[in-house]
Image (cartoon, rainbow, N blue to C red; front, side, top):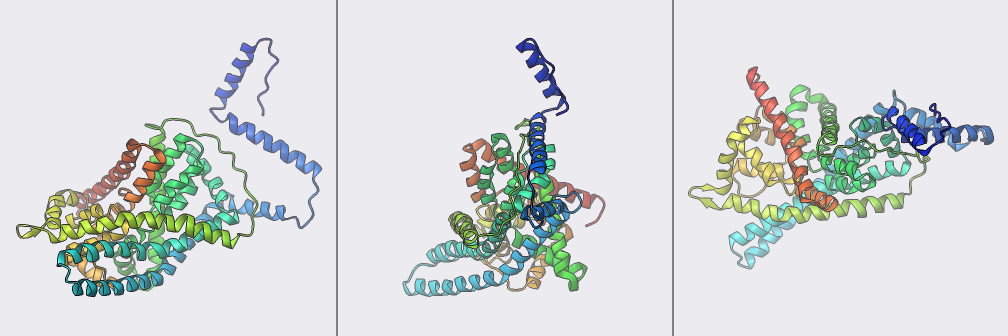
Amino acid sequence: MKDNVKPMSTLAQLCAEADSIRLRHDNTLGDKIVEDIYANAERIARKTVIAPAADKSQWDNKLDDILTSRIFGYPIMLMLLGLVFWITIKGANVPSGLLAGMFFSFQEQLTIWFQAAGAPDWLHGVLVLGLYRAMTWVISVMLPPMAIFFPLFTLLEDLGYLPRVAFNLDNMFKKCKACGKQILTMCMGFGCNAAGVVSCRIIDSPRERLIAILTNNFVPCNGRFPTLIAIATIFVGGALAPQYETAIVTVFMTGLVMLGVAFTFAMSWLLSHTVLKGEASSMVLELPPYRKPQIGSVIYRSMIDRTLFVLKRAVIMAAPAGVITWIFANVYIGDTSILLHLVGWLQPLAYAIGLDGYILLAFILGLPANEIVVPILLMSYLSTGYMIELDELSQLHQIFISHGWTWLTALNTMLFCLLHWPCTTALLSTYKESGSAKWTLLAFLLPTAAGFAVCFVVAQTARFFGLV
């Protein structure tokens, strides 16, 4: 350190000099002490340790020079993130379809059993078309992506790459007065926000841990990806250049993810300057050596500790949602179902933010699980009385267009999907981790306000300039 403490005759003078040094370094004194310790250790090591020419640590250092550099570090992070998304999305399509086919085949058998038992239609509707269908939808949509994403995430963790990601972004989080470890919780949030909230335990500072918990929802989870991908494919990929649809949708989805990350930084900064004021704590991150992953450990940790844990919570939350949705769609007040009455009440607010009452109600009823938003929307549009899904995106496109969708509707639906409130599973995890109903309410209100504000500004701007 450049600051030298002069000999002092009294303890008071020594304390005054220490305070002066601390104030000059603006809360970075701890960082400078750690830097000085490691710099001295490195100098001693260079003078006393002779490394063989093929020493593994030299390769580690060369890799670190690339993966943590200002030039290559960020592009490599984006490419790896895109690769993980691409593998997850592409790999999940087939098993999701197989699971859905298996579950719906069994649904037909359940229907036969109910009819043979002489069960009333309402009981069949509540238990089969409501509860069972909602549960199976969540499993078929969530399980395959999580079974792919979490092992990939754990593999990167085992290889030793994720600490490099935290190192690269630590400075940006420090500017927001947050912790660099927050990026690790965000990565987990891509698989499931509930898992991302639980993973915030790795952050030592209670203030910074709470910031990470409250902002994790701005990272889109795999429950929101099916909605985002379907709408992006229909209105972006197909509209611009059908022959390059996959590439265009991938770039667009990456842009949406980056927008979510930008909101994470913005909200972290806002929280750290308002209700969670404080200075960023020093994060001493010792980069582990690169190592060969233990496949057995990767599979166990990703499948048992993460995938099944999150899936169980999601199914528990989705089951009652399916029952409530079926009741709303099949109980009538006069000549109109409760669901359509709710749509009418929500229409003015929904129009102000560039949506319609059906879309906003689908998001509200999808609070327990984001996976059921589109099925609820289709059920409302087609007045089927139960959740449905279409085999072809072209059919989905035709339904949306026939119900007045424009590019603004599609864009704001994706923005609202990205920024809206957390699902019930994530909120439950937030309550368990924070131990406070107040912070859980803020975790709900923060993204909700952001979603409404952004969609309102986009909608009103587009209408003001006559773009729709």
